[in-house]
Length: 408
Image 1 (cartoon, rainbow, N blue to C red):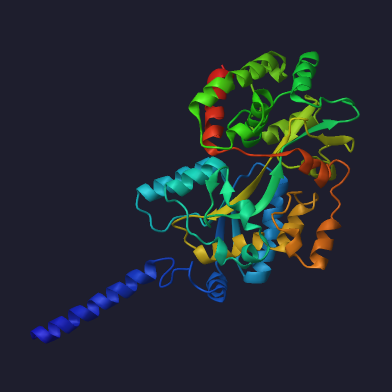
Image 2 (image 1 turned 180 degrees about the vertical axis):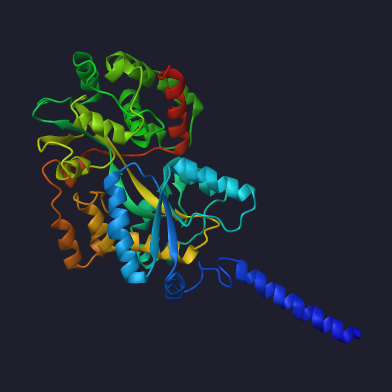
């Protein structure tokens, strides 16, 4: 074999090896962030999307497993596999995969926001930016409202699929005069020992209650809408710790233990062991009435100092084995059809992320026709007391401070 033959053979072998290696890449030979949407749809068809999400709410799991999975199969021939896992756990899983150099992982789509999004974005665990590639995002989502997630710029690395607002729940038949402010709540808890508690942070709902109390006991949220200020936190936080320590002896189980999550607190409330419940979903009580868990006398309230609201999102893993399928699933979750189904308390009752002004008249009418039930506060009542979330560094300081100052 002469030199020219050897060279030609080597070139052929190298080309074959390059082709084989390209075929091993999940996105080869394309970067799906730049491919036109018809190409993304074609690549997604017939694939499986693994959706990692919090699994503690049976009604949400049921809606995802039946309606969402069914529609993705019918419309796009996509098989949706829901994997129940807390967000912090799957972020750690991605960190381990990145450290091990796994170019192709096991997570496609994930339900994420807050500090988990910030940590994932800052450590390069997210695929993107991809949001603007999604037709429903470009057509219906008010981009200015989803520019930040707990103070972290989203920059196209996640797509919104629901909005939420913090509320309390009570049974009007057994608690006809619930507290209307945090000052009244403190007095009410002292007069009704054992009848109130909250999930232990960092549970999302329990952490939200602590943030809500932080606003109420330290002069409002405005001062915290900036980067974390350790001096300000050190000056203000003692008022919060004093409040929470004052109510602790009067809590359920005398404050020796706390419900591990919001689902556990839901059960305590439904059984009548506590008289006040809380949720980050305004239609949660109505959904529980519809599924028979709550009595039809349960109602929702917000306290005078305000009600925190936020947006929750989906994101795609940096090493997603099926990036085009994840993009199509994320886009579908923002569609008017999916948002309408999710809005119905019989399914979930999660509020939409869409700008209603961008919908056609028939679509708007369909949202307006959804019966949110007697237990759900009106949009006007919620909007009147809505206050924003603060940045994740404030949140983490509150959670670690609670564990240090209140839990012992």
